[in-house]
Amino acid sequence: MKNYSVEDFKDKTDSLYRLVIVAARRAGQVGRAESRPLVSVHSRKPTIIALEEIMDGKVSYTTGDSDEEDFLD
Picture 1 (cartoon, rainbow, N blue to C red):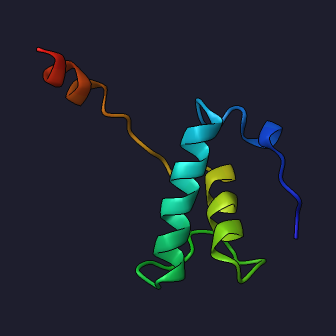
Picture 2 (picture 1 turned 180 degrees about the vertical axis):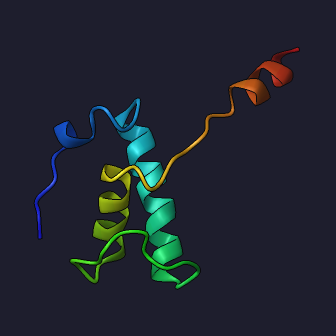
Picture 3 (picture 1 turned 180 degrees about the horizontal axis):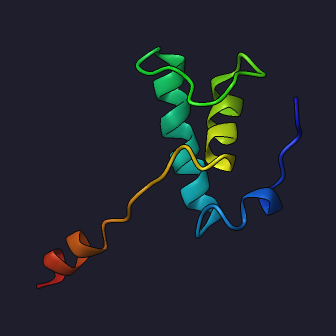
């Protein structure tokens, strides 16, 4: 199992906070068996699987910038 650091994800997300949120949500999906892993599994831990999927670019996210603009209007 590979050890990950924050620096490994520098180009994958715009902030550490967003990385934690995306990985936690994806780990929840994998842990509850809502979806199967999108990468070859090297670990049984859902959090590690989620981080590997983010590293491989298999998991993406969208921001709600338009929602915030609509709220402010």
